[in-house]
Length: 323
Image (cartoon, rainbow, N blue to C red; front, side):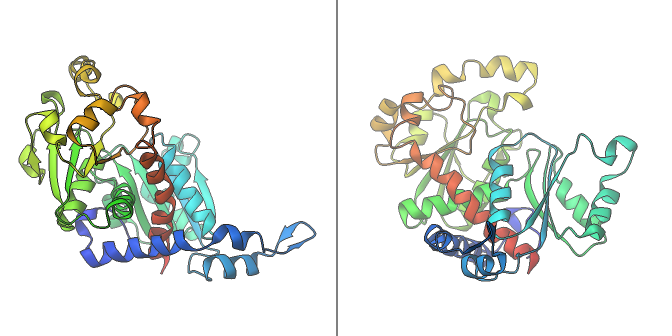
């Protein structure tokens, strides 16, 4: 499993392997080891650093290229941090000043970068299935990691969400996980639904009419007709971002009423799902999907823990890609 393109293609064993490795990385006492690193005239002894901190993992000294054709803060920074922790070289590919402006194809660009020495490409793009197409056309021994393609998939987000659920709940088997909001435009929802069903969770879904996907039957979960019923007695309440940048004018007009009806508050959570953990892929539209008071409360800190876990999951994914 060198490429990571879609959760649907992973077996339960492969998912568990990634999570177990991520947990290992998280449990390593990196900070205490960091304090023991010797300096020679102000320069880190990288050989000792790599061996002690990363167990001489297979990524050390390899090169990852971050190709983000859509704006990203969390995912891009998380992948970059993960690669840095693994001792990888990082190329931050600037799509605005690349050879695309001179007419070069994406295939040719990637193959040139491959021969320059790139080992792994981390790609985010607005086009569905673009990573698949690139992987099929490229004649290079490299790995491709999907960092989010259109409305299709965001596999590492689902993996880090799963890791966070395991930390909080111990297991997702038989747990009620409710996914709410802009499901129609959400690659996060698709990847989470695929993973949670593999892991035997009870997936419940709710979206206002303007955010219900056309192919609703393809989303494997219990569709609820009422927001409060959807979150009632849930173990996990996962809110999705209202993706204004993907909405047409009609959808945008409809979505403006979203916060008045569907914003999750502490009172609402306490009434219907007091024991639930709340999750969100970020960035959160404050007081739209989640109220500021809930987001800044102890319950809201789980969302920050998701971001932290993302680094360790992506370390495990990058490591798989170069083995």
